Length: 366
Image (cartoon, rainbow, N blue to C red; front, side, top):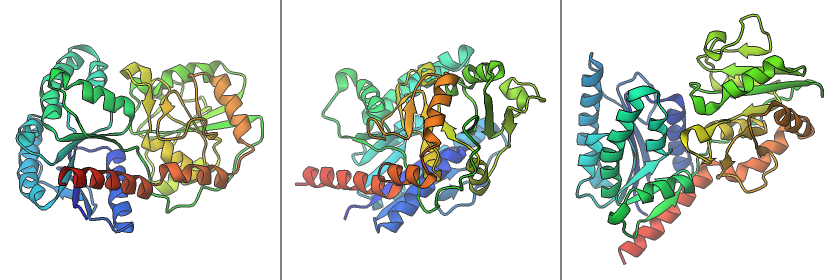
């Protein structure tokens, strides 16, 4: 059996990244694969997957020191593995230097990096996207292959090779989640009340919340939006006295589970076109589904089969969301979770990628 290391580095990784990588390590261990996951950070996070390096007082020094220590560690550790999966860090000179001359490292991509950086406001977006176009493209060209969350992302990364293009091994690895928890309780209200859940670590423009808030405020429907994350009425742009917007703050999984019990749908990104994307398979949507919540989003979910009944792609249109909600009230929590299981189970997705990497490795080595 081939040995695989999946590594990443981030000064302050999002909770979504941490949960994804924890779930991957647990899935690999559960099915007995020689697959290790490590996340290097200077943040105070307790987890077996964490490689914690001492933080430096200055922001830039912290960034440089962490990456220097990480790539030094990775240079030694990579010798013990047949294949290394390295989560791509935007405009990271250390990554580009580390990849020079290596023949067993695949870069892992979760987004269209250049387009996303261009979407940042002002000169910052222009500068960072230009840096990624140069430094990130150099890293991509030095990688042995690609592992991408969607086919759309894979096509974008392959195009970065340009005239340097070669027959590039590229594998699709959709997001998934562990399915240890059972679906949440069903405490939904009647046909005329609609409660929607939005869990997020932030509200970038591509979430499209602004498109929905105005509609809720002017709607005659009995609609409630439940926000879980570091938000308040001011950050969303609503009155503190408007009880249609419920702010729960940052919560752990058990708390989210209780909040979800009273909700009809989970809301995913509604305006991904703002960062040039049409396809996605967000971790958030998988966690809604495992709780038994159908999902409404504004993108094609490439990790689910076409026509999957518990995911609806549509515009940020409140009437359409309510219509979908009314239909979904007829389905039980367990029916939603069971239908989603084959497509969101992290164990299945890790096994599929491992088998694909093994097949490639065996062909490469005769």
